[in-house]
Length: 221
Ligand SMILES: Cc1cc2nc3c(=O)[nH]c(=O)nc-3n(C[C@H](O)[C@H](O)[C@H](O)COP(=O)(O)O)c2cc1C
Image 1 (cartoon, rainbow, N blue to C red):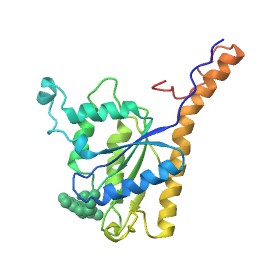
Image 2 (cartoon, protein in one colour; image 1 turned 120 degrees about the vertical axis):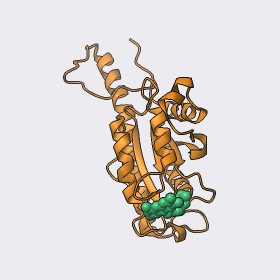
Image 3 (cartoon, rainbow, N blue to C red; image 1 turned 90 degrees about the horizontal axis):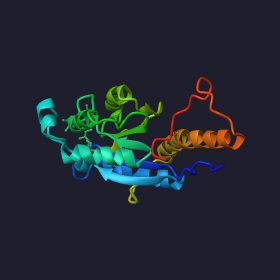
Image 4 (cartoon, rainbow, N blue to C red; image 1 turned 45 degrees about the vertical axis):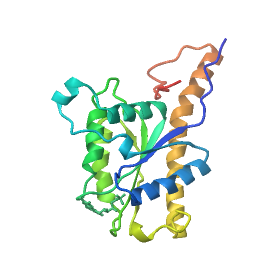
């Protein structure tokens, strides 16, 4: 009897959805990276500029996918879950992010399907860009992403970071850390539980019972 491969550490694609130099969301992404690594996750840090695409049209798609879309698909496939720190533009997500999502949604198999995601935002406003995250949920959930119920929005972000790039207010920093830890528990369970269950079924020499054993299949093992 050979048991299936043991799953490795959970890998997180992390990027800010801002194209701006000096982005507050890029700074929040750096703070998120520190927390993910402190909790044992592997981070694949990226930037929106890697995924920027010309405006989507089906005519353009007929000529081929742009490099930004190919790159976002590759990075989604290479990671188990993703974390986006997204600015709020006019109560919604930035157009560049929605455009990249639209492009990537046209690949088959559809790369977002079944991925776990955590949404973060930073804004100088008092609401921290939170409305934009509710808008971002809609296309992601439509595409089969398991969007973590809790989100983190950093209000007055232009004065929220200390000299080390971390959130200066301890209570707020703790809230980011707890949100990330909860998300990581879920992403880890989603990755490891099906492998553990497969190994156990093989160990017992039983055939899986599909009506009872409904779990997410590991995607990349
Ligand atoms: C076109 C545009 C629309 C904006 N709309 C909002 C908004 O609806 N809510 C908000 O909190 N901030 C809004 N802002 C301000 C952004 O939150 C602010 O510029 C922020 O720094 C952008 O994120 P970044 O620093 O990561 O680039 C808007 C900014 C721009 C350029």
